[in-house]
Image (cartoon, rainbow, N blue to C red; front, side, top):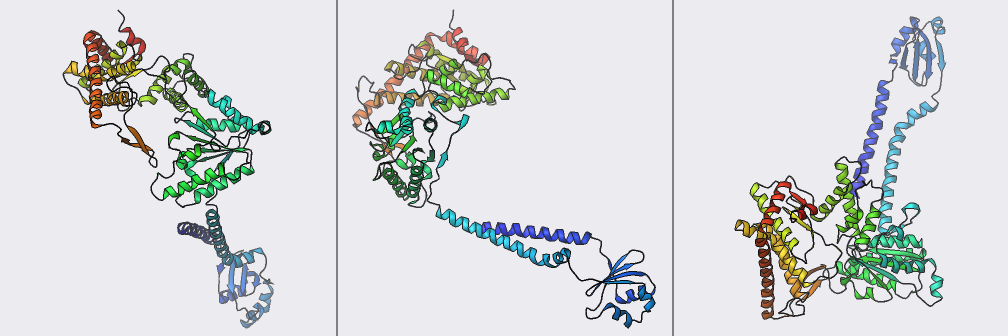
Length: 605
């Protein structure tokens, strides 16, 4: 507050100085009459040089015969005629001078008299008024500290979000359509004894459209939509979050029927009794208030609470019980058909050339969420604009996909000839083994141009979306991971640090294959290790061992055996197809990048 007062004081001081400077400038630039003494005035009258004298109290305004203006002063107690008689002026000469006596009056007189007094007082008054307003505003903010910061959204016209504007998510939209029907015509359900759902929890990975679906429900039902983030409830002061929850539901009840949407509810809805520190008490009180408002003593309210989270496993069980979040809707990653529909939505208002095939783009983007697809098309539009194109080509979109996956190209990251050759053999090893193994995904692109942290990359894409993976697929994938390492070892006699990430991924996959998927022949169909999470951190930082040290040795040995077998498989393929490996390396060193057609052409006789 002191900083604001000082700032305002300096502003008013500056304004006052500017006004004073303007007044002084005006007075300095105005033409002032010459001030003369009484003796000089007497001499001018005797010489018959004065034509008129205007008397204003003690001030004399003199006009000479030549038109010049002068001023003089006399005693306020004596009249001008008495003064002239005292100087023995000839009466005949006095008759030639026109004398007018006027009183000081008019706006100018009062302005000149009062402005120097009232302008500073006015500035001081305005300064005090603004200070009072700010103090009052601070008090108002202090009183409204516990009020909800929720934003009320009213969708109208073309900007209205409905189910038609949300591509994919067919099952989720079917579930939510019942909620829309409840909001539109609750009597139909109440006559059947059905109760309106208290809460709808949208669960899914980031970018799958949870917030967009919530807006679509509000748009379809045409009801008020209160949106707030879970973190906006929590403050450093205990009790503020609970107060904001009460205020939010109070506002919602006045606008019922309506929807309250809490984004990232895990910020306040995490399991109670597992946190540390004073902030946990505030978060716990906020959660308690949400539980009471959703299913407390007052049950007949026509307010539906929708919430979104990508961590449903850490939510408090009291939130997930029936009567609170009655519906739990899972949003999966879109399949190829959904991806095509999402691309069509985001392709609106973008000038595409005739060669753009969104179906092929959908095939090239398995595992992409809706947000990833929107980002890919946006990056393609930016790339086309940078190239001064009038429309977006297919190549722009494909390059943008690689940018989203791996990062931007780093053509300035120039490798020397030896490093370039090592990178070419490394990527060729990955690509050749992926091509030869039957359970590996097809190779779509091989490049030795740096992207992100990688010196080169091999891009493999599945022909169709997969939800289940077999052991043979994992075994082949291990061999592909080790293809670059084996190619370097067999060609140059030693390996480089370029294979470090491949080895890490291979080790992680082999461990998961044994400890999570139960696919090891010796250890049998069981899992190893119970993973625990510290809720207040939201991370998996501890794994409790539920097996003996002897079993741990067997797990380590099985991981080593899997990786050794994958190494033997990779070495066998690279030795058998050494000529083919050299062809791929030669083509990479020449072109730097091989698309799927160019790559498969190398295997045709």
